[in-house]
Length: 276
Image 1 (cartoon, rainbow, N blue to C red):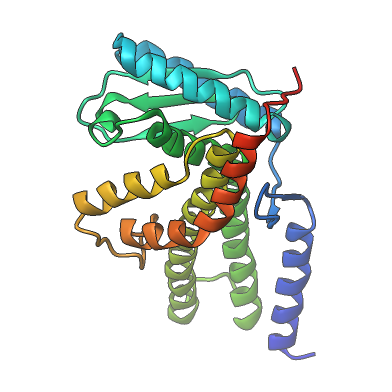
Image 2 (tube, rainbow, N blue to C red):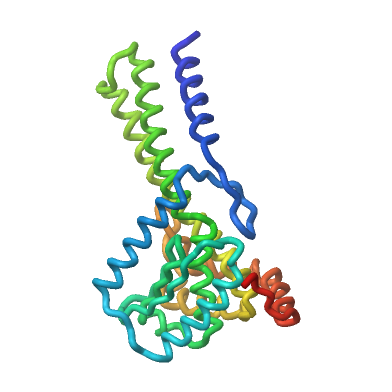
């Protein structure tokens, strides 16, 4: 067998071994994803980080902001119960007036920065943001990123094995071998950024369905993203970037709107029937 044949065989065997170690299915989209990390471990890590955040960052006492977040959090968390049945939900408004941001963590920890209320005017609009962040968790994007980073690292190891074979068994260190490794590293960086953009787009799709099922008007997600697009001028590069532009996200949300409105109308017509 040629050296190229040996290299191809090594890559195929190791890749199949890595990909077969764990998979799960994403809610709403039905996408099959790689998941090779422990739920328990990820939750332990993120809960510990959330506790550190609460100790280090000021917590808002604004009654309106807190009431809005608790109302939204309660309704959406009940809607996603079957996707996160063991979550211990906690919703905190952090006094960060310069940050237009929010986040959710595995285990049910959700934070909103007060700066977000510069573009949020109603509970429906807040629900669009919170649902998006919770969608990242139910889709296990944290798990997937950790798993994918492991595969990127393993891919580099596979490449090093391959270049050693091509070099007649010597360790990678030649100009040719280093060039191949450099090419891999650039490609891996762009691939990880692409994964992140895909996760943001997926969370938008899942989130608008979640908010609709919880009885919030999906058109609110459109309004929020329109304001975001105005803030960034509707631009923002997507190549080698971890987020799609606000305009790209807005266009995608419009494409999900019919399905989301069907869920919203169904939610308005059907009494809440939660499992507790």
